[in-house]
Image (tube, rainbow, N blue to C red; front, side, top):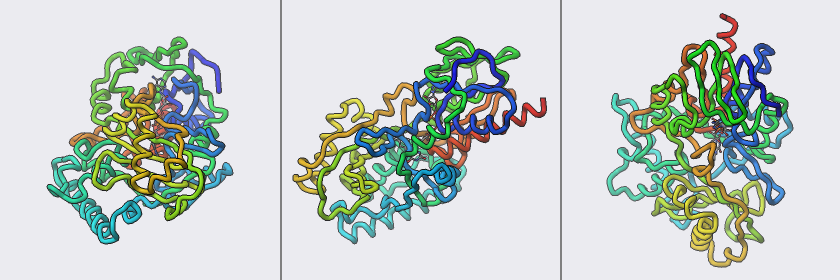
Length: 416
Ligand SMILES: Cc1cc2nc3c(=O)[nH]c(=O)nc-3n(C[C@H](O)[C@H](O)[C@H](O)COP(=O)(O)OP(=O)(O)OC[C@H]3O[C@@H](n4cnc5c(N)ncnc54)[C@H](O)[C@@H]3O)c2cc1C
């Protein structure tokens, strides 16, 4: 990492996936001088690998979504990462979670009907919420809501149909043995990043742009802002003169909440294969998704989202573990209590520099992604997962948005 500098041609705010993508593109251009300003004492942002038990645990992004189209898949391979291609069983796991095969078939048919309803609704002029597509009293409504809390970090009532259908998913999902966070650490290697340098104000009225940071002022000719929408909407970075368009766009794209609880698992679990996926309850929205022995590790990864995750963050790690232990006991019998112990838990809503997990668009606000991404005066540029038109809420969407912003900045430099 690098030392603070008070004058550069291009400043990038944030060293998450988007900031790293932007900085790598700027370095490749061997053109204008640049510096990445990062509030945390580490790079990666919402991609972060820890290893409290010797194997990698991704606190944030874990899956290379749309892995066959994801630019990070070949990069990971080239850098020597072990890429696991075993597909996750996110769709067909009800029969193992206490439902019959007929119930599972009914669930799959309901999911397909919902997908058709979304496509039809998205073609209409007015936007609506995903909840408006539910069949009143439908058997699977609570499970659909729980699924939304995992996919969007928010309940169906909060999410725009038009935005949801714009997300592109090839259905191929891979994982990295060493962790997605480690990949971004490697990608950031050698980049000029000033850590522990939060930016609090962007004064863009003068000839040079002045950035107020915790370590003094940095002036730059161009700035790429990659911080989460939660930081912009809360005005933790102030624009001077103000940019009401950006504040409004950020408010239309709040961060949902998704968290993980990692549990150690001793011994065998009869009837559950390695990398088995289970759902705690098919009749409650407040439930968790479980990954048993992921990548054959002695562990269970628990995933939960939406209002439920926000409430569990407030209750703390012991209460979260107790909830998971109760659900696992229901699914697998009381013997499991002797086999499990908490390893680590996340609290992304309470995380000072994230304030949530990934963005979704409120009903009627799907076009806020383009509004947020639009440059201001050819000098202020915006990147980050929330600005991605088709891969929002992902690490590769963020990375690609950073590259696009850097290319736009470089194109402007050439014209000047
Ligand atoms: C629990 C969870 C699971 C996820 N699972 C997946 C997954 O499986 N696959 C996937 O592709 N994606 C997943 N994601 C989403 C993915 O992690 C994010 O979409 C992506 O990492 C966002 O990158 P970014 O660069 O846009 O933002 P960030 O990673 O948030 O980067 C922004 C950076 O800006 C910094 N910053 C904030 N404020 C300031 C300031 N004032 N001054 C300076 N710096 C500041 C932050 O510290 C941060 O480092 C998951 C996220 C979570 C939380």
